[in-house]
Image (tube, rainbow, N blue to C red; front, side, top):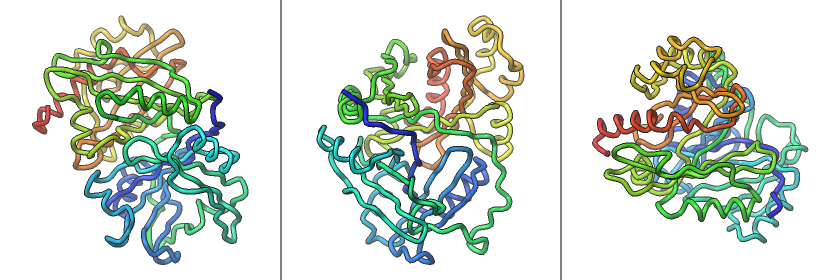
Length: 366
């Protein structure tokens, strides 16, 4: 199946209970700049939105302004989470028409929104759970983000204290779906968007004494858009995927992996900003050099920060995972640095999932 030509992930839209306070968190903890606002002052009556940027990453935080908002029930069902993964394309109408022809459920018909800054084109299709994909083209648009958004007013939001931590781009975004549904969504991305399967992990690869899961990674033709898809596997106890599905109220985005060029510097900055990360036992580092060979980073420094390392035939990669960023044990983030490796950290799965299980045990959900 020929792939629908996606250029990149344009932005990730979160639906949250309080967009202003969430923007404060992502600015002060993750180092994003708050660049634009949409709401009552910009003649948008039903919701407020904040646009945050760091490197090539754009997050949009949206909150309803009343119970009459068409998505207000989402907060009760899911809590704060990702509602839309927007994809940059050259031809919105063409991509949307082709996706619908291949079986995608349309959520928002193509439209061209105009203001004094130009034309902004958009259309949406349904993905897993309540998640959507929006096709975006802003080639003829010169505004700060989209019609309805204005540059942030310093009187509304003080932005001068933001300190970027070195996050550069989105590496991949991971979906959790119900048991038995992983292959269905792999087929969705293959059939609808023309993705191919990059790698597959079964419960022999991703398991501990208590829980297991299966995962497949799909990507578009250029490799710029990668979506691992997880489902729970049969095990003694409830896996992290089961926990997520319960507290999120169904399938959704589990985590977003953000690339950095210097993970040690980035993680130090984020820790100084009070970001909480998962930790593995110190013994993980005792055999690290035997497992991955020579690396440029200091192993004691990696151990101090809790950064994991894995290798493949093309090099190695470093990664670390935050704890969930809200009260529900749902959405979290990965910070990743690649030194040639294109892998997803298979060698770290057991240590990582045992760390997650320790957190589940504290929560009483294992």
